Length: 274
Image (cartoon, rainbow, N blue to C red; front, side, top):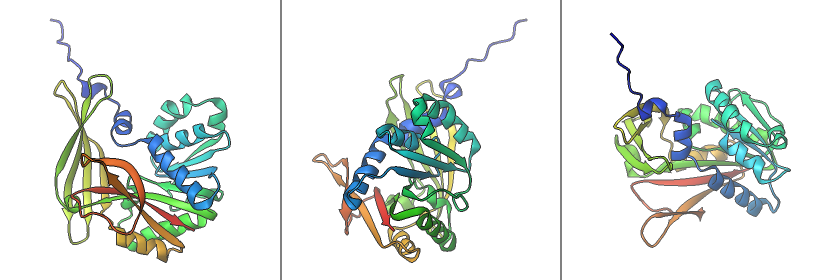
């Protein structure tokens, strides 16, 4: 008797790193902001970028394609995601671009690199440091790694929904039937701000990729982050707040701000100047 074939689902065939990039990361917009803001603050172009917690190194790859004088260093502890980035992102670059990009498997608290113009620590990855001592140690390491006029770029999120245990879903058009991105804040402890989150993906055939990514973080507030950056030696810390269009949707434009709106959810950028 012939064995019954098991039909593979869209979730079975999905690549979680590709789904992440489609759902969460826009390397082009990120580099637009980083490069233009550095030019504004320093009146010169940045040329050497270090991406901490670089993941697939998508941002590093975008950086080296922007200018033939741009160089990038990506640092991450996860060899699996670095290997994926080498195979799917770095390999797609031109030979000359590849030579200007270095990926390092290391702990950002210990990694040694030449002095850089920019350190980028995006997608809230620095939230894995859950106590003041360790986060300040990381900021001090970054301060030391920067050139004299270097700048640290980060992002943060907040709002009253960030203190809740909730799921939010968003439809993603990938040009091949689409899928749902699901952000799951599974646990939050208001006493120590311990936050556990997961990313799930759901597909049109009813299949799901559960816990494609999981995060064990501390939800850091902007006053805490700003205070720690100042204590670590940075001379000026600026918050860049996102504006809104006429329909009440985020417009993707981030400007320096001293006041923000008490919204349910917000995302901002921060710069910390050496």
